[in-house]
Image (cartoon, rainbow, N blue to C red; front, side):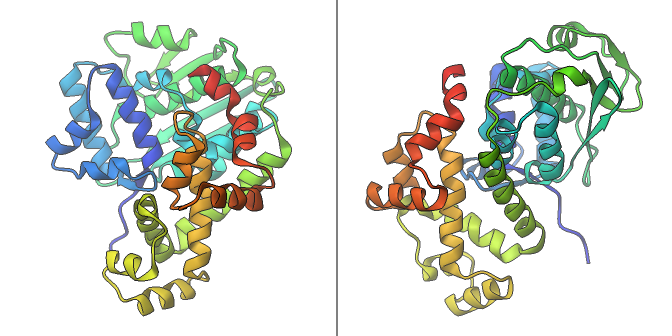
Length: 343
């Protein structure tokens, strides 16, 4: 049986879209030019096939003439691009602890991504790789991951962090200027791996955003989502449909089943086989999307309530307090205050 194609999260693709826009490109237009369905870009829970993103990167380089376009990712840092993984990193005690969480949950961001963290007496090496699926991965994709990781460190600490060294498993490019400008450290090409060598002192300094209770909460959600993503395909597919339908109001079982080309009874049976019922999945989906939407400061609480399918915003406020023990406005203020100030 042929294995399923590897996929990338919509959040990460959104980050790529913002990075390409720095060079004046429209990712939706690139999707259409390649014959890909650009509607998935509007679905916060969608997964995009890795090979499709490889084709997008190649076309972006061709259209922009910028072979280092992946480095633009350093200019578009937002925790929401990682969904619950980003918020888990933010609430960690240190960058080292936070990137440990990224390593643990990286499949949620992209199934082709492979990040390792190697601890030495005085240093911490973050090693990056993007594995191709049926097509070799674009060089820009791994450079994008490196750029984003470094920019996230700088954003989290509000410090101009400089790596001890940046290494690249590729030949030296003709134009080194964008690499020197971003990394501001010794660069090594034709290296065994792509990596950032960081000082342990930097990686283990306390973070101002640390919150142990929130970190545990985000760990639970990320762990649950990872387990479902790997083991429960019907549950994951149903959740994607719920995400699309929720802005129109609370979806009914029959509507969701029809969207999945199956009967209501079949949907319920297959969900039960995966250990969940429809109502539980609906609530879980709303709960997880609430965290994603609260990470977007431009959305009002009223708009978020509507996007989650609540006819009355007061029902959303009560549900959120039941889920997390505090009102949504207070959650946003505690966890995302720095993000709002940055933007």
